[in-house]
Amino acid sequence: MSKLKVLITREELAAKVKELGQRISKDYEGKELLLVGVLKGGFMFLADLVREITIDVNIDFISCSSYGNSTVSSGIVRILKDIDYDITGKHVLLVEDLIDTGLTLTYLKDLFMAKHCASVKICTILDKPSRRKVDLQVDYQGIIIPDKFVVGYGLDYAEKYRNLPEVYVVEEI
Ligand code: PRP
Ligand code: MN
Ligand code: MG
Image 1 (cartoon, protein in one colour):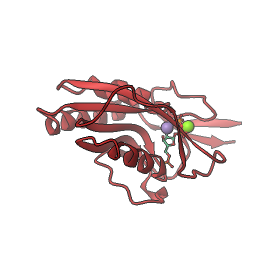
Image 2: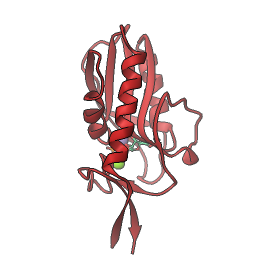
Image 3: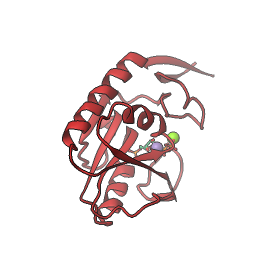
């Protein structure tokens, strides 16, 4: 059996999302910004983040999954759904729920850079820097969390709990 314990409340999440939205609005003023949500986990953060951004933006999604077994990230990422439009010359901001090893975003960043965007930056609501396997620049870092298995606010445990509005630690009992 597993038990859930609140790690980050709605209020803490909302405050951080607001702060990130304000920074992004300022930094990208006058630029063509395309926000790319990384599915599935990034859906909730993206939806909240865009409501805190005060400049015009475009929104798209990419869906990807790592090969290999589920506990070890191989870094080889399979694209399940690609973005829809040509992004040449656009400023791309990848929007994630969590950075763990960093392998997913390293792969995605390289992929987007190869498409000749004006810039590619990274925004995540949760970050576990202690788990990093590759050096990755996180341009908009949300909340740093310890090396615990977390769910909620988009994050799943075997596809469950994505809808929870807070972030929880899963404890086996
Ligand atoms: C999770 C999370 C990130 C990625 C981070 O996605 O949402 O996308 O893992 O891990 P990494 O930094 O070690 O690469 P997951 O593969 O579980 O897919 P999901 O978003 O559909 O749940
Ligand atoms: Mn994900
Ligand atoms: Mg997952």
